Length: 604
Ligand code: SAT
Ligand code: MN
Image 1 (cartoon, helix red, strand yellow):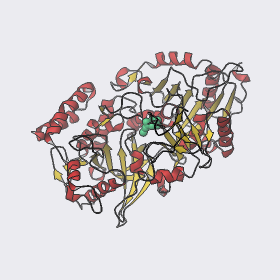
Image 2: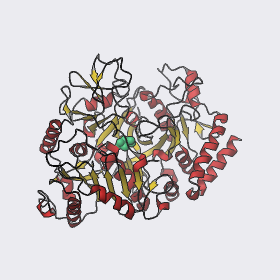
Image 3: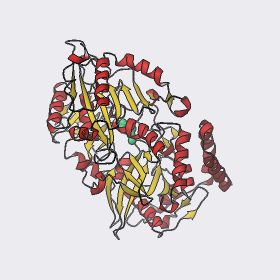
Image 4: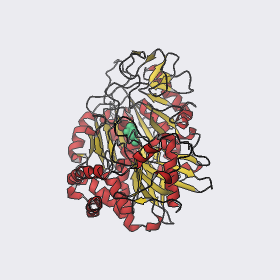
């Protein structure tokens, strides 16, 4: 079939030349049965979800309106960092923390993979916008995909469809993002419920601001507006244009005196960003509202402060561990319906269940579609199983969440998952020291990426898998932001760790979850000049009596353990930081080496 005869190709609701020629070029290469231009309508959602039910990909849930259960191929459950590439012209522009291949070589490989890859399928053209549609300029993208699952997920996670296409006009810039599950169908061949290919590539062409993804249907690999655009490509845009694209939640905190502060916080995947973003304070008079749970774009406003916008429109949250105790807000968001669940367990009455929801029912269908009982050895839900739900349903959504101006950030938190060494909270001496904290932060790995879980790795600003260029240049960019700004207006930087354990290594000493509001309160009081801290070798750390512990039943010794700065533990950390810096030595900015020397000196 020639491109001219592919049904739908010529029904483009746009005159945008570059978009039209790109869509035609992809259709010629991938040879789908038809092309559909997505409008983002309710009718489109209805049609595609019906089709997914029909295909066996979705099971309609009985207890939550307009909601669906899906299970993936057992091999396609997480981001594939080993197959994720930054294809800059020069390898040094990707740096040692990224896989690199020359764009020409990568395109040669991928063109062969894409050739005929959409045969027997529909090619969807999804115009989307990351961040508010009325931003000037809007951050536009178009995802071409052959996956209905991806289209309906994009309905939730992004602003998309006709209202976005209007903003393309005749020549607006956009990021082309091509996705195929990589499973062409022969005539008459029955599709599987979750098509995917053993060969996977998640590739980025930063100079061209372009994304090509092949072989996976999983969120972070396939919903290309998310990590691929809003972090890897946007971090390159941000470097060039003087802003920051970060792996951060955004929350609004109102004190009993009605003072408002906005906080952005970076944690690696599956370390509690969503829980913190939706926290329900346990101390009277404090209020938290949510603006985002995963990504923050931060730019300087006219007043010299850093303003954050969340580019997304939905939450793609880790299900296990989420329940009415740990995150009632997330539960109240998803119970309203309009939610996709992937790789959780299904109850006999067609509701969802996952570990952490309390006593399991006597029988479930697990994420591998096997019968499951409480005696089963494996968890019923995959540890990286997800809910995908509209932000607009969040009962504590801050009204300004869609404001193109963004919200002024008072504090930036960096956090990891560490059993030892890192205290509950630690304030940076200044911006440069804060960048050092971010640059050296570390975390035990989680199920959000394939590979071993629980291994300590350095994860600068929780961006290790998401920096679209050389990590050293990225850290330099952070330092540069501090050099160009009015320092009195910059957010203060804090390093937090909710996961520290006692000496036995068994018990997590800080209760975490909602009780983290006590740490936020101390941070806000610091910013307001109403709390003290002690200067330690690693930063400014409160003693237990500087944290509001009223009504908390955690033993005081545990809080002290959580806050303890153990010089010997930190001395043992130094070689690990040195090893990390040695790895990036060619591009490590000098001031960070100076910070390391200063830390060594302070430790004695
Ligand atoms: O799949 S995602 O990359 O979107 C989730 C995550 O790992 O943070
Ligand atoms: Mn994330």
